Length: 96
Image (cartoon, rainbow, N blue to C red; front, side, top):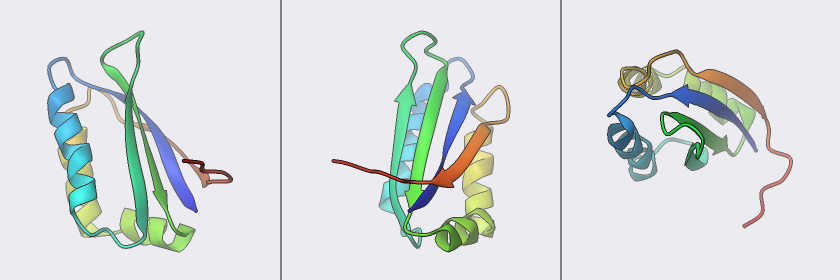
């Protein structure tokens, strides 16, 4: 598995819209995507982290390079006060 964890600074009043967008990822067919999790900081309600996993680095890269993902990213970015801070890497363990 391969994916990313990103730190997001949400514009005040835009969290509900971000939750809706993140939830929509589970409703559309994104090849290779396994899961998406959105976390909200207890210390700062306008700080969130999004974690996304794909079945391979190739699937992750293909999605990242797709025009459809760019459209999804632009919609998410409009809700943020700063660019996300991305941390890509291999998922070495996932337990449910």
